[in-house]
Length: 253
Ligand SMILES: [Zn+2]
Ligand SMILES: [Zn+2]
Image 1 (cartoon, rainbow, N blue to C red):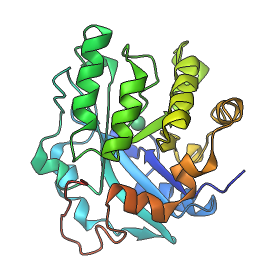
Image 2 (image 1 turned 90 degrees about the horizontal axis):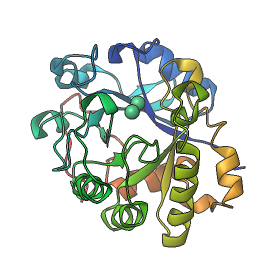
Image 3 (image 1 turned 180 degrees about the horizontal axis):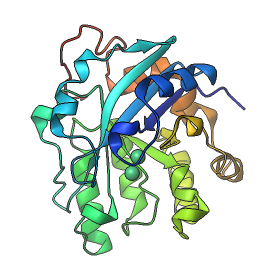
Image 4 (image 1 turned 135 degrees about the vertical axis):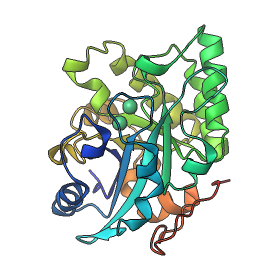
């Protein structure tokens, strides 16, 4: 097994239902040998998350802590099948990394076809770097066009460990993630394993994902967590993003 060097999707206490500070998260990431840690607080539609000014002020956070490069970002909510996001372009511009996904408490869905169209619009949004937990069974989706569009637009698809926790009761998530992995292998679409850690101890915990990778004989070269340099170039994120202390971000394609 290759070494995990990136975990791009985690939450600090600022998300409102997570339990570690940024500093504790960075320290835990260093102890686990990570080089890059994304801290992606929930977008404004999730009850109890940070206010908008939190994202605007993130330039004060040093992007190197304990030898770990921090990417300060947001897990933006997809609100409907028009691809509407709950963070506007001004605020997305303050992020180092922008991930987007569907959350049942703030999403208006439709048929499988409509949901897929909506997801494709988000994948084609050049400001979005990664789609979080597309296989988590919240929305009915057609995975093949999603996998093809993700490759074309350099948008990463996440295979999310947290969705597979038995407490989440997402019974179809296991099969959906297997389908996603098979399609990503078929089309050569890179994936990101995501811990979605809500406490520092969960960082880089992918224990529920290893059996899926084994079952699909998933190629190492399509797992972006092993390849920090490729990750930055694929997403067109400057490796020193945030170092200037000035808010800066640009569309990635
Ligand atoms: Zn989520
Ligand atoms: Zn999350």
